[in-house]
Length: 204
Length: 204
Image 1 (cartoon, rainbow over the protein chains, first blue to last red):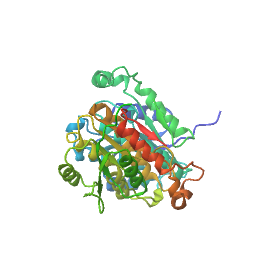
Image 2: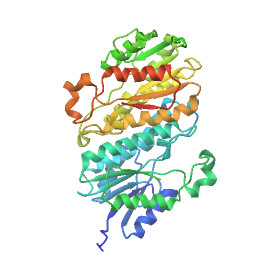
Image 3: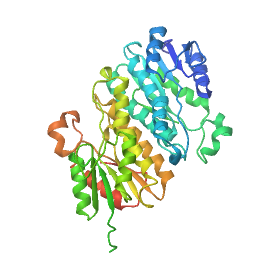
Image 4: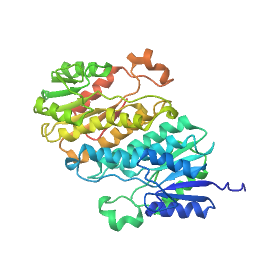
């Protein structure tokens, strides 16, 4: 059996439900994981600010993979949304991750990869979710487009439904939708980092 | 046969290849079309500015449908893109159309509709198109999400590939992709305005 290549991985958003599981899954495979967060982690940067992404990459040095479990968007009825809410969703989940890729191209290894986070709302909407759906759709189409330009580097997205572990908090927003264990979503990151696919949106 | 209901329609972006065809198709069905453009049309407003959309709606009065054929995004290799380019694409094609819907909800008729423009790059990327793909994906997911909140008002998107009429100019960007006559894309607007569907992305 082919020996696993140990990778140096930058994990953005390591403290949430998903980020914690992704950290565990990647570290469990033997990879070296550098965590990045606004207020916690090995490196403290706010990736919604493109200037801080630049600093982050300068500080981190050469890595083999960038994986993101970070993104936030406002949730409210469309009649209560403002233009600023959609702009906040764009900066908070789309542009932040797009900039991780764009600025990362010249900095990660030659066959390195990016793995971004989107979510089921890109394809299955819920009330109050127009900004989140918009941001997720933006990231998924960006991933497909970026993939054909950055090869042999790769980029994929993980697009999970509600996590089994979050049903108590969010379950009422997803009536009848089958939840996914967060460990399964974390495995999609392993699949993206260690596999050879690109331009994929792993919906689970 | 049921008599056609004549609608008062706001057409944003009436002067381009698509807008001209949409104007012809809707007027040909007997609808009253008010054209909106930055530098041409019955009403002169820049819809990339949310404040001007507000003025536009105040000026136009009650309409039955808002149809958009307007949206612009930068095209360049991802390695030459900047954060500002993605922001420009967001404002130029996504937020502009989202705001037409959001601000229009309280202003168009009770069973009125919105029809937005996206494009094939949401699903089939081309080099230099990461910003356009991103904006199109944002609009398509927004449409699916907004539809479930605004009923009985409706919202759909038209997502065409390259126009037969534009092959001389853009054909080399879409090698082997079947083009679509712009008149067919215009019929998708008729289908959205006069039909009863919502949350649809008409890919053609």
